[in-house]
Amino acid sequence: GYHDVFNVGTGAEVSIREMVNIIRMYGGVEPQVEYLRFYPQFYIMYTQADTEKAEEVLGWRAWHRPEDVVRGLVDYYATRMDAIAEWSPEPPTPLKR
Image (tube, rainbow, N blue to C red; front, side, top):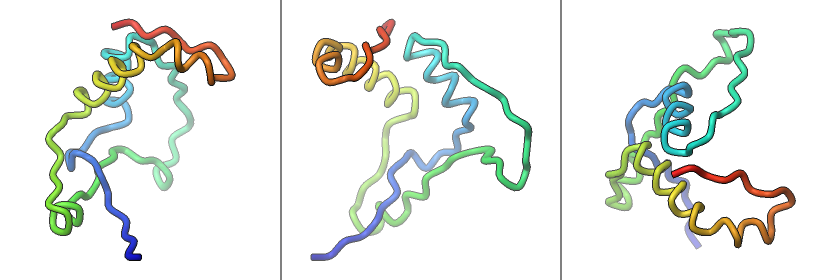
C-alpha cells in the first residue's frame, strides 16, 4: 500500500512558553518548568506545523486553536479518571476543571 507522512497542527506559531501557559490555564495544574542554560544553536523558540501538504493532498485544514485542544483533552480525560487509574502504573493527577 501507499504510505505518506502529514503534519497536523494549526499552522500557527506557538511558543513553548505559550503552550505551558495554556496547559496551566486549562489543565488546572501547575507545570513544573525548569529553565536550562540557553544554547541558541539547539533552542526551539517556536513550534509550527506546516500543514500545507495535508491541505493539498487530503483537503484537511485545522480549525481548532491550541487552547481548544487542551481544554478538550482535559475534559475528555477528566471524565475517564477511573479507567485511567486501572491501567496506569501511578495514580493519575486529578484535573481541576
